[in-house]
Length: 332
Picture 1: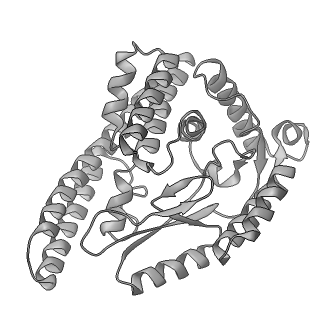
Picture 2: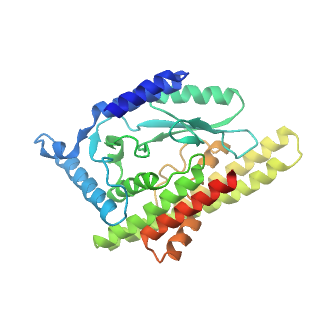
Picture 3: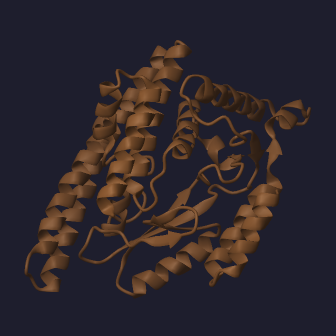
């Protein structure tokens, strides 16, 4: 609690309402969280919630014992936030660029999004950016990490996921506490996705859930197909934006390519026999495309690193840290 109060006081000293709403939102989470053990001991806790929280406890222990993820107070508590999303993320990119705008913060460094604890505030910021000529995307976020700086709770917004998705997100968010490079969202998210991926495989194998492994692989294949279509569209758009053309012509060709991508994505989802999920929510534009490849842009590289380490997790973390250090040195 003391850490949170200090964070709030620091935030209040910074200019702008953005930091104030962030401090208030984080303080709300701190106020609402309860130890999971206490909730499980409470006779009024519903059987459904109790079952999910026991799963969280099992996955948390597995994350420490098997995956070498931090043994700390993260995800030892639960907070009922009484809404579908904990924050809303605002992403913006210029009309003729796929390079997302970045914002810099004291803890996270420079990132390609801005998070709001109020959807209304997020939409207001999105409208302001759109008026300045940016392509904008607003997406609800059910979970996020403070990188171990605070005791992150399991949120009620996470309970809508199935068991595998819930466990996967826990592994993903804890991975950010192992390695996080300020100013390189693509590196961070791809690394965490790699940890999530091999973590889920080992979790399901340890529990003998062969059918769930097949379902998980099916989801991964769907995501990879969608990413391939998105990558092809990005390449075409980058080529278009580099050409010397009147803006109206660029807008027309841009829109045509985005419509084609939307059709391709719908066909991929239909062939896979899955529900569309969040893939077809929201307008396709430069900001949306900037977010869609963020989590897997460097995933093949991290997969190769994992195999190079003969699937030894400690080796993988060590080599990933060395890779991050070499990138930081090259950037200086």
